[in-house]
Image (cartoon, rainbow, N blue to C red):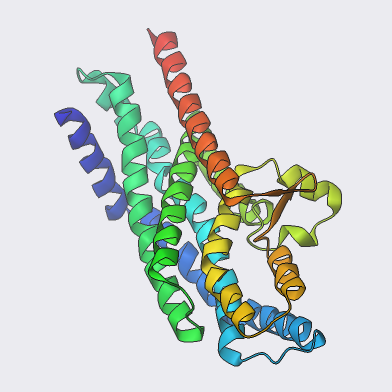
Length: 300
């Protein structure tokens, strides 16, 4: 365990000392927050306001702000928890490129300990950045419209932790076979550009075609995004009901922002979303273990 602790400390220090990897990770949530707050917030606000006013409801600005803000921060966190994990996990590839991994394996250390150290250090670094991003997002939400309870905040933190676990496990499996800078850059670009769309963060899944919705419903990231949306917007929907908004209107809004997800026309409950996400984490971690075991057996 002493060797494992030393490796985790070494990997974490190298990550935060490498300004390239660190700022690439940190800039993702900050840029997304600025872009969302500057450009998308007006689009979402106009969309919500027009939909509610068409239903004959008078909408306070604070309520609109809370609704838009909840959707924005849930989108940002859903993307960041995975993309930051991929950036943090690039140290595993960098060690192969620089030859540091070869030097580490010369030492009397089991390959499983080295693999575990990469996973845990990536998890630690990503959690630090994503929890910091969550604090910034909550500050933004307090500014535009706060309807969260302590339970909602705790649920958001749990969702972030689970998505970070998922992102770390997924990035470990994807980055494990990479051995060049070009491969690492290509994977990072693809993940950064595409993940937000397939998890429903950049555009609600309800806006996709029916066939694409069914395909995306098999992806675990979709359910992580929906969990964040449900907890970020629960208080807003409760306030809408308290102000006399028709239940059909509130339910339509929940559908439009993916708080309600449907798997082949069957509504997915929150408990089922958690089960899907946890099962995906376990499968990805198991795959990472198998990949390392096969690699160690091949070398021996």
